[in-house]
Image (cartoon, rainbow, N blue to C red):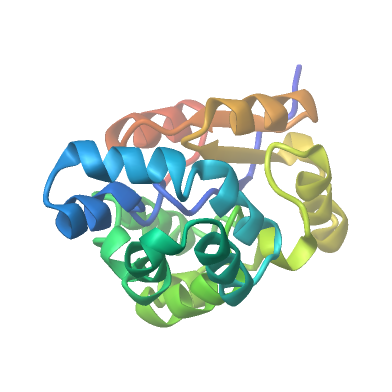
Length: 205
C-alpha cells in the first residue's frame, strides 16, 4: 500500500493569496479588451515568469520599456501598483492552513514567486513568514515549477520523502509533476474541495 501522507506542501499564488493582473489593468485601461491585449502582447505570462525565475523587477521593467516605450506608464504600473493584483487571501484557504498547523501537521510551501514581491507579501500576509517550516521560492533557486528539481530542493533541504507529502496547487501541470515524483497531490479549485480531499487522505484538523 502507498504510504499515507503526514505533511502538507502548499502553493501560494491563487491557493492562499489571490493574484490576477487583470484586476490592475482593467482599472488602468477602463475595459477588459485593452487590459487583455496589453497582458497578451506587452507583458505576457512568459515575461512575468522570468521574475519568478530570478530576474529583478528593475531589469524586467527596463526590458519591457525598451521593447515598448509607447507603453511605459502601464509597464511601470506592474511594479508600482503590483499589490492591486493581489486583493487578499483566497477565501477559506488560510483557515485550513491554520487548522492544519493547530493540529500539528508539518507545513511547507513551494511557490513560483519573484524575490522582491515575495518579501513584500511576507510583510503583508504574516502567515507566509510564521506558519511554514520552509518555503522554497523559485526566484531564490533559479527554478520554476513544474521543473522537478524545485520539488527536490524541498525534499533534500528538509529530509522529506515524496510519499509522506501532499502537494496543493492550482496548476494542473504542477500537480502532475508532483505526482510523477511520488508526491500525493491535490488540484486546488477552492477551499471546500480542498478540505474534503485532505480529510479523505486521512488528515484530522
